[in-house]
Amino acid sequence: MPLPTTLTIRRPDDWHVHLRDGPMLELAVAATARQFARAIVMPNLVPPITTRAAAAAYHERILAALPDALDFTPLMTAYLTDTIDADEVAGGFEDGTFAACKLYPAGATTNSDAGVTDIRRIHPVLERMQSIGMPLLVHGEVVHGEVDVFDREKVFIDSVLTPLVDRFPGLKVVLEHITTEEAVRFVETSPENVAATITAHHLHIDRNALFAGGLRPHAYCLPVAKRRRHRDALRGAAVSGNPRFFLGTDSAPHPRSEKESACGCAGIFTAPVALECYAQVFEEEDRLDRLEAFASEFGPRFYGLPPNEGNVTLEREDLSVPDVIRHADQVVVPFKAGERLRWRQA
Ligand code: DOR
Ligand code: ZN
Image (cartoon, rainbow, N blue to C red; front, top):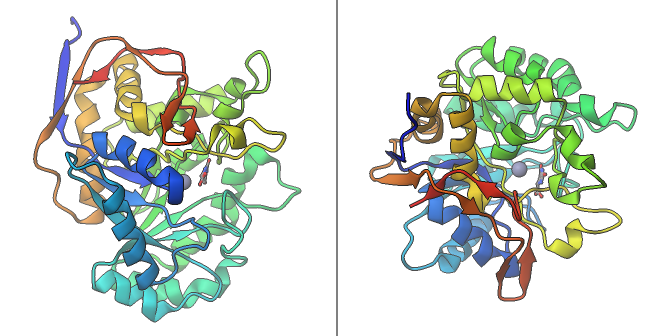
């Protein structure tokens, strides 16, 4: 069948994004709001978002940074710590301040030092979340130094997540940015209240991308990309039509100087080219017909929100991705910098 030259889908959402704060905020918000109507905004700021007041203030800063022409709704999250107040979290969900809570195992990734040191410490909070239907969003990696970095997701699933889902069978759980075949199987064999987001970059790259002709800091994120067979399992899940796999970019901009460093930060800035990257994968998998459900339907269904009104159109035309994206004094290298993509947003 000849490929379509345009593809119009219902306006999508990004169910996992880092919009940052301060000087990076405008750049990050504009890139996301150009493509997505809503986004689940990660709370890993310094200091982390742990209260309704902090979330409301951050929500205001995001809206203030939004270009006038764009219509965008940030959905805020609370950052779980060992000592977070269950009333604050639950109250924030009930009054609409928080859409979900994010679990960072302490030390797992960027700005996760205030994260949870032992899941048992937050059992009372999880109990409460389960009882009110508040989703738990999980960074699924163990942090012990003796576990190989490429095994951290698998070990987390076996040692933390499986017992957690057994203990809280009614808790809505999203395993974020999955990177392994084991994570795909875990979701497929879990009950309906367990889902996963899949990033655009993990559908494109495998771990070779980190070492292609030299050390490539812009391909470094957490969880780190795995072997090709894992990437292919993620592709299979994304195009499967299973509603428990949906779009979450994990777009995570860092200043170029902090990526190109002796100790480079984890995070890939996909927001400027996210939909194009997803479309390319769905095309390569001969499943363009399933992009809309993955990008625009399954996420709202899981979160219990209505899908967006309105559409976006992608044209099958080459897009040259710039080497850098600048805004004020910020310089960020986007995913696929200097490369060509086969789709572009009209
Ligand atoms: O690569 C990542 N970057 N993974 C995360 O979990 C956090 C994110 C960030 O905030 O930079
Ligand atoms: Zn993230």
